[in-house]
Length: 440
Image (cartoon, rainbow, N blue to C red; front, side, top):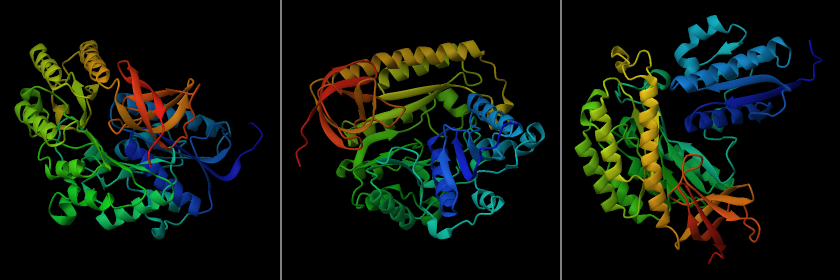
């Protein structure tokens, strides 16, 4: 048993998975801090009395990472390196009973909507006056901004509704209040997230109200960029595009996971849209907001995907020329509709198909980036790395998209500031340039 150097009342919050989980951890950390806990996010030192792991249960790799993390801290508890370990989030919501059996060292398992119960276990109060308050884990100038929880979509491959429940919108007034609080603390960019942004408001206002929300958020002083993540293509509210075109604060950026380019597979996935309708939608989006960057994600190797289906997707990606694209290999998730089908595409074929699409996208991205050379772009700088100031344009979200690099040798840029940059060269995923003085 090692000597005890644990800091009493210190909590280390470890976050796995997506931006929705980051948001949830930030809310939990604000509640803990208000209850006089000393809170760290992914602390370097193992000196916390309590560890809370916010897990992901989305696909196999993410589940494995969550399980490995739980086991690591269960071992640390056995060795006396931590006192108590709690697990929350999607994996815990979905597999609570199995996890209790397999890893009994954990002191408590909680689901995605169990924050008040978790706080009670820690003898802390859930402070209603703090609703909307967060301890940011991102750089201070941007924040993920969750506008709704859960999902009502019937996609065959997706386990999210099992883990996050039915769609639940946060009222516009509450979101505006949160945005003002973030802006007062120096946040300049809001990244709107939900399982499906386009469903926003249907439960509260009996209509799709994303456009109404955006019109209120652009009025918040201090917020300069508003970015839209995770929009569903079927039933897309086109009035959102008019609001985007008419308001410079709303980034010309749309993250719309389209999942596939074959109508047969889209039907099997229960996406409620055909490839032809998808192409029509993309054309309309680009005509309404000229210069918009569209980001999408796809799935390779869905059950029953033949070489012909894949070729159809490949040709469609080639024609569509998406600005940003990511692709997952299909993960066979129990209790989803697709689990009834045979997972009949071999792993190596899934991977080969995903790599083929990424090679194609790399070439498209390289061509599109060359057109940026010579342009002046407004860039928000996030960090320094390898002798460069690293930032993003309105067409890029953190961690998943392209970056703009300015050499630290002859420039000084304050992180969290917007700076005009002239682009001098470009490769497949990055732009390089020099800072220009900003005109006020």
